[in-house]
Image (cartoon, rainbow, N blue to C red; front, top):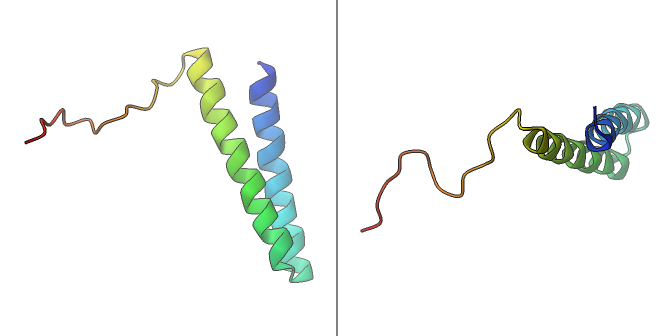
Length: 69
């Protein structure tokens, strides 16, 4: 497991924890920070999977291979 995957899991876990603590404290700013940190973790996870070759890269166009008119 590479460091990017570890960082992604850490950011996802911390983001979810911040969201739970924010719900208890009714703190919307902390909840938003938790969502942001979770998103960063998900992006890092996707990038680590692309580097490892387990997921194909995201295409810049739709999969239907349509031709512009």
